[in-house]
Length: 291
DNA sequence: ACTCGGTCCTGAAGGC
DNA sequence: TGCCTTCAGGACCGAG
Image (cartoon, rainbow, N blue to C red; front, side, top):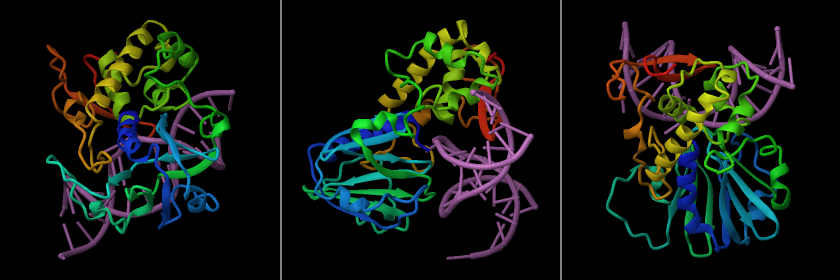
């Protein structure tokens, strides 16, 4: 489910609960996510101080003292919920589900971390496409998960020239190319559709033909949609929520995603949003303004 | 070396 | 408490 804005929002929810705290207790209730948990997973976490909670692409990274980093991926349906020892319920739109009571005993609550402050952090993932593992902090960038991952789209270094170089010679639709984490990190189906709409580029267009002038429009479009979505706390579609249970707002600002048959939202465009399937995934676009 | 389709898993939604 | 099919925000793996 979660793409860069959602993962970044989760990071911002986890950081205040974890940074500078020790993991007093780690419990694995179900050990078979996308891949098995590493050996002695809970033991290697317990007693460790969390120095920083970072994000790279769609991965969350918790640097621990002792030289290891906890790598976490939410897959399609992963969620973290933070329950403070003294919980003050704020007004707002909360997700009311049994799994959110903080007990960590819901059917799909797989991992529970408890800090030295008594904060409980529960990882819930009904589809189990998520991932948790430990790796040496010093060599993280060379880890197979990260070695080939492309640039962070919100970094200054992500420029039209850089994207053009990555797209050059690619004989695949631009839609598929942008979903490839080696081209650019962190984009998924929603924000690829949205960025292409904002840039006026058809998802069917050959990636190589985007290199150059079209990349000059596409890169700012990617940055803009991601920045806006991060500012809104991500998109809450289906069961995505922040670590505090609140919902993101960005789904209300999507121009094309999941709007098949509805009118194009671009001023003066009378087109309708269309859906097509590309490499097994839905693309939403307006054939009038996207070429 | 690339590109594409199938696959992992569960639940929600829609058609009948 | 209806049943069946389809679809879902990700990413790996093997075939061509």
